[in-house]
Picture (cartoon, rainbow, N blue to C red):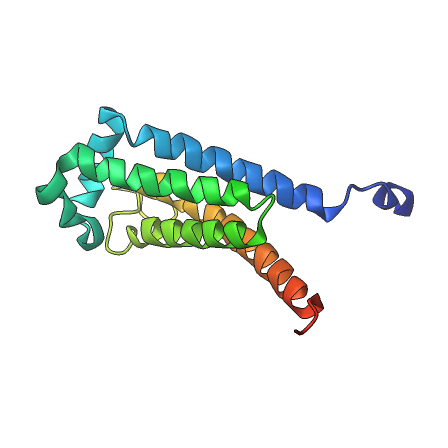
Length: 160
């Protein structure tokens, strides 16, 4: 068994896989926000959510969705830049953490369990949102990795 474990690739491969997976997710979801079907879907939740509700009267359904999509694309871009810059990766991962904390907060007071069955039978809303818990953990892992790398670099830098 130890011989197999001796052949494992370095942990950096796992961080790289996590990084590029999150970049892909932010790119796909961010791009989708510019489509009418996604804007309408987001509006069903966003129009009643205090953090976003104020934007709808100002810039409309598509405008609000475009803002959200731009933020998601920016988070993905910063996470991607984290492959070369721990500072950018840290900022991008923090943006991702905020994104998924916000989406998970949609579950507060929402109908999560399938009508007629109850817990643990999830309704479609819960199925849509609960996956964000693992995406939150992925962003937390990337933030910790970048933060520890920044700290190690700062500790190793000579004092002027």
